[in-house]
Length: 306
Length: 203
Picture 1: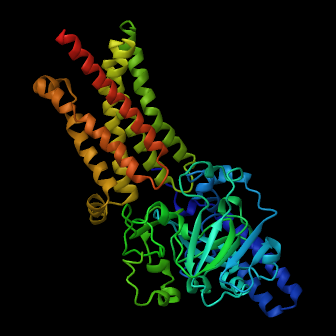
Picture 2: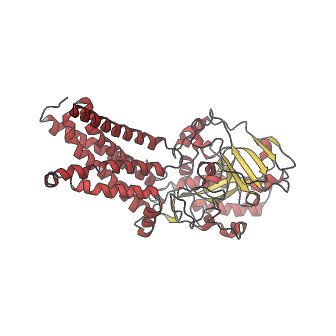
Picture 3: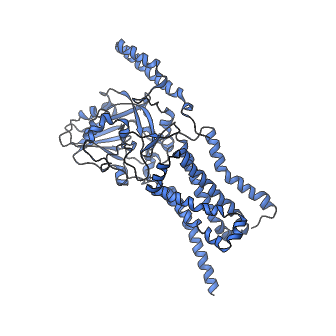
């Protein structure tokens, strides 16, 4: 009946985005004088028609990525954030970094980002609700940023906080969750090269509904770990409690690693619906990033530390 | 209040019949125009579920409305509205079984056993089946008094339906709360009505 096939997805969206991005990068690289790299990128541009992740998954369309969001600060419906997030002011923006580190401080976003080289990372994104996307993020490794603040040996965990301002984030006027939204990672998870701080999607700046101007992306964990619109980063010794843990500790653990073998009490996690596809597909252990990150959890009972 | 015959049966009732089909029509139109958003199956699941609950509550509100605005004719719409609840419940169930789960029976069975919100939803549907099956005039005659008793199942069914929704939502219970509040009002009116009737009767 009614369900659109993957082919019906607006392929040209994807291609246009990537061509645009590829050209820009090409020109930039040529400007830098690296002809070898430049020509290989030109090859990329020519092959840009079907850009894929490491497991040959097609990208989710820009439209779907920017209109189907969980961002309760702008309403609990999937299409609410795209409608309501325009009230968020992302400039000026500052991020406070404090806790167990030698160089804490409050930084204007521009200063924070200036030394960081952004790159594109195509990651699978798996929501705890059983849907998933493939997203071309622009960003940089969180670890590279964190090192600048020189975390001490007591910094065992990193805690993140979203902006708290019910005027800009009208969803915060209702106590659906305890505001502000907070999240945390173990320091080795935070320092892992896959862990990204994202500033863009499809080569464009993040839209507000996707967590502008700065959000976390941890591709092997359920989406809610990837906290949006970050204003605070805090190093600490004790494991912090995340917002969803506070709301329902039985259903949401601190780790929240994508794991088809550990069910959420209300959903099986064995399968997922890739946005744009009809049939569900099997969910992969650690969202397909086991080779890279399984070592972080060696010897841990992942059923207990869910 | 009364709509004279034949206007009630020739015009009003068909109008309500067509109106009750509108949720399905608009869902079909949206699907056809590709306006169901990024996750169409989720929209279809939620919409058919919402309308099942709404028709259950509308069906329950018929006797209350009849008493409140003294419109006896309304009762003649109740069977149709109840069957619409069953109709949307069936669409809802098949959306889950087919579009969501692709008849992976092993997974479906695990869902029914392990996930309380699916357990109660499935139970509510199973209980609806005998009500739909006994909705014909012949069955009403055949069952006599037992028909009324059997159809009291609408109460546990609706309670299970609201519970199904409540247990499904992650954090924002505003919507299921509205359904629960309406159900509570409808049940309270019945208790109040029975109490008033009893008091009158005892005098």
